[in-house]
Structures are given as C-alpha cells and as structure tokens.
Length: 302
Image (tube, rainbow, N blue to C red; front, side, top):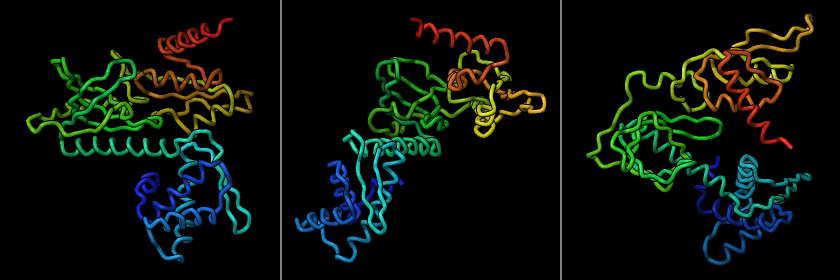
C-alpha cells in the first residue's frame, strides 16, 4: 500500500499532491474541495484529463491515502455524512508522508540485501551504529530478518582499518546511510559456514550474546489477562504451557516454558509485562532480570 502511494503518477499524483496541500491547512476538506484544487492544477497547463475521470480518480485514491496515513500514525479525522465525506488533519507534524517514505526506503534496502544474498554478492555502504562512529563496510549478507517492526541483516563485515572479517555481524537496516552498492567484482563473496545460523531458531530478536548457552526459561503469569496475552502472542515459537490457571484450585497463575538463548531482547520483552510476569528459572537468568529491575528502581529513588 505505501509503495503504491509513493509511486503514483499522472492523474493519481495530481490528486495526491492536491490532497496533501489541503490537509496541511488543518481545515475540513471534501472531495469537492479536492476536485476544485485539481481543476486549478489542470488549468495551469501541467496536466489534463476528462471531467468524468476526475471525480472517480479522487474517490479511488483518497481512501488509499487516508488508510496509509492512519497505518503510519498520522492523526486524520474522517466524517461520513450520507454520500458526503470530509477529512481533517489534526496532527502537528507538517512533514506528511516522511514516515511512509522512510519505511519504503527501508523495504527497498531490505530487498537489495536479499537480492545480494540470492546472487551471492558482497555489497558496500556507510553504516552508523547506535553508539559508534560511522564506518564504511564491505558486507557479505547471509540472512535478512524482521523483528519488532525493524529490519536486520546478518552476515560478515569487512571494515576499514580491520584486518579480520567479523562474522555474524548484525546490520540494522535503518542505520545504513545512503545507497547500497555492489562490491567490486574482485571481492569474493564470503558464504555462511555450515549450520552457522542454526542458533537463530532459538533466539528472541537478533542478538546472540557472547558465551550464550541454550536454556529453558520458565515464566509465570500472575493474572488471567497476562496469561491470555502470552498464550495468544507467544514470545517465541518454542513457548509452551506447562501449568494452566485453575479456577477450581483458586489459582490464577499460569506457567510457560521457552527454549532460547538468553539475551537483552528477551529481558526487555519480559520486563514489558511489569509485575504480572515472573522468571521462575533458571536461577542465573532470574538473577539477571532481578538485577535489571533493581537498576531501574534505583533510577526512581526520591
């Protein structure tokens, strides 16, 4: 949907531009207002189309744009009164469609990395990690993965000033700067090793921490609502119920198990449930979550 909107041409592009300009006024606008704005554009000699086609294009295009705006977090009010429909932009962000454009850019980068994997080719780009200076990478992508609304690629990186390639390097696609280009044809692609990425099937997120060992984590939900949330939206594909709540026994708690490599992403997901979710075991991971909670509590001491 986002890609379709950004690739509008001709009549659709005129309707798109007219609707955008009217939305930014903050006023209630109707299809007739959009039609009038389009007619003004046509009278300037830039485009022309038959009158009978104008309104049908508006009726088709505007709902698509409206849905895309809502899906990307923009606040637009729509009022239907019989056959009459009005729209009003209620947000303060004047950079309409920037989120949509950026999302489309990320998907394009993701597809480019995927294509390099299929063709077994290395690529080059500038990369800015969260806590480090920008670096120029020659990257040999092996896997593309989506997690928690973000896009990632994992592979081998060769960096300026570094002699040894770094394996299982995680690239966050949104931290790539500029274009992704194909590496020089003299650069031999470094393929993945046998079973190098088997760990991913037992990972929440994308981070395999140093010296991580596979563990069976037991979690206890302390109310029916949290139990239901975890039951319908598991943290991991290995998650299973080991103890159901029992109304007969007066027990609202329920236990889950998942077999994963403990990492920061798993800790973050557990903490997002607050006091309604407890780590029962193993002891080492329970202690890690406890320490994170203590550190958080120290921030709020008054």
